Length: 85
Image (cartoon, rainbow, N blue to C red; front, side, top):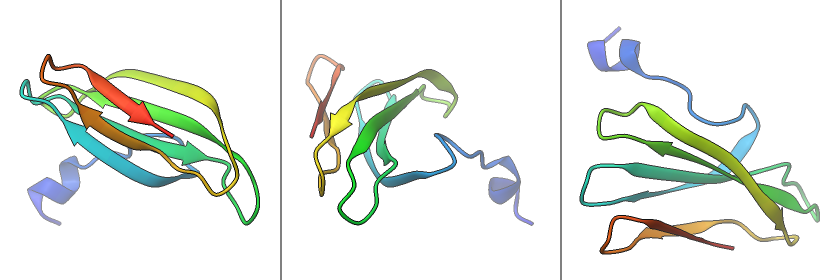
């Protein structure tokens, strides 16, 4: 097993789907995903914020998403993040 594979960590809930990533100039990475999605089923937004070293610093759940929806995310010039649904 490679050193990279050995150091990999699972981020987010077990059943998270459709992950999207956004990275800011500070090297922080936002991973947004959905929980509970299925055919014709609404889901919930979930996010994890990783520092520049890849450690989870903040995690949270958001609003319910409409059926057939998923998250999108981007970094603003000031370093903050926006999630869209």
